[in-house]
Length: 315
Image (cartoon, rainbow, N blue to C red; front, top):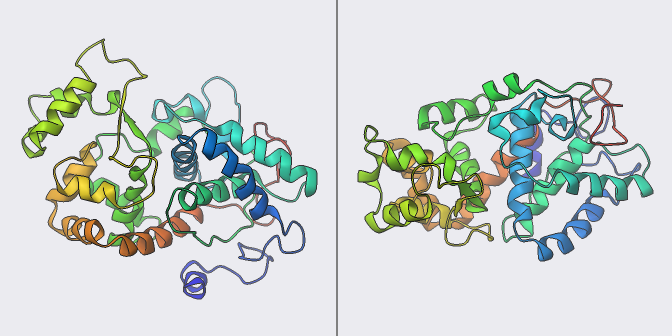
C-alpha cells in the first residue's frame, strides 16, 4: 500500500526535494511518537479535540495547500477572519506540540507536518485506521486573505457535483471523495449550517429526511434569533468514534448536512455510500488513501517554504 502511494503521488524515497516517509529519520526520529503521546492525554480530557484537529487540517489544506497558514495570527482580514472558518478550534494544540518538538529537535519539524500528524492521530486514536503519511512539508511565508479563504472553502450548502469536483482536483477517485466526507463521523454541525435546509420552503429537503429525525433537528435548531452560534447537533450517534456510522445514518435518512442527503440520492455516490455503510473496512481503506492525497495537496518542500519556530507567526 505504501509503495503504491509513493507511485501515485510521486513521493520520493529520500528527503531530497520532496515528501518522504523517512524525512525525519535522522533529524527528528521521535517526532511521530511526540505527537501521539502529546495528544493521547488531551483526547482523554477533551473528546471533542479529535474532530477539531481533523477539521483544522481540512481547512488548512483547502486554502493555499497544506502549509500551516491557518495557524498564523495575522492582521485583521486574514485567513482566520473568513466566515467559513467559523468554529475552527484547537490551533493552540499545534503550538503546544510544536514547543515539545522544538525542545528535542530545534528548527527541524514544520508546523504543517505537525498539523498532518495531529489529524492522523485524531483518526487513529478514536478508532479509525492509522494512516501512513509522507512528511517534509514546509510552512508558508504568507497568509492569504479572508476573501481568498471564502472562495476556496465550500459552504454548508455545497451539493454533490461541486464537492466531487473539489476533491477530483486533488486527485481523488469517486470512492475516495465519498470516503473523505466520512470525516463527518466525528464531531458536530452548527445549527447555522443547516437553517436553510430545515426551514426553506423551496428546497424540499425535509421530504427525503426521516420524519422523526427532521423533528429532532428542528427542535434542536429552532428558526430565527433563538439559534445562537453555539447551538449544534451531533453528526451521527457515535460522534466521538471514527467509524462508518455516518454512512449508516445517511442511508436511513438521518444525514445532517445537505451533502449527506444528496449523496444518498445521487446514483453514483449512493452505491458507494451503501458499500461503506455495510463494510467499514472498505471505508477505512478508501479514507486512508484520500487522507494521504489531501495531505499532499499544494505542499511546499525544499526551498519553497520555511520551518517556523512559532506556528502563529511568520518568521
